Length: 268
Image (cartoon, rainbow, N blue to C red; front, top):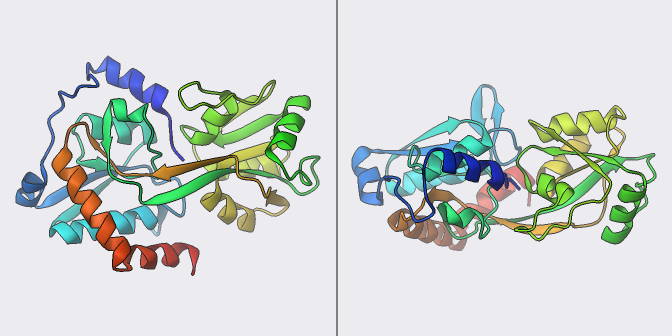
């Protein structure tokens, strides 16, 4: 989902952090000694992280809390801007960042990552009565959006933004002659789509399927634009934490803990 690496890399350069490391970090032993795992997130991406009754909740939050229990420590979750969450992890201000973060080579220049714990993809939301509603292939969608010089919404800092605008590192060509409009949340983008201010919204399939149940007159097209994997980001070089997270993820999947968390938010 969230891939605003250009902004992140600019901020990293501003603070003088290099790809070879330099930021201090807490090893797993130090985290256990401190008794607290500090976590950065951006609680604007249901069902992975969101606010409910004043509390940060979601699939990612349940997963990282389960990891805290696995270590025997408290989990201090800090809600912040998505770019800030990744920057905080890269600088060692938090032990890790979990926020439906897409793992790729560009991000690995400034962060280390756990193994992937969840696979996702990008989809298109359109109005039921739009000229896009009957499209069933990626080529047809891109051609029609280009021909109509479409205005396309997305959540700021996500894969959707890179897909619309194009990015060489991510091997996205971009959608020609379209206008990309970014929003703080996907919900705001879908609301503008519903109100006729956008032609389409490109976003991860999980929140997309939630949004179309909440906003009348919109639908998800039956086409997958991209496939990606979510992983937990940690300070570059903190291999003890990476190894520990990988062991935990493997055990959570083999013992059914991860399936229980997923089913809680998506149903069996």
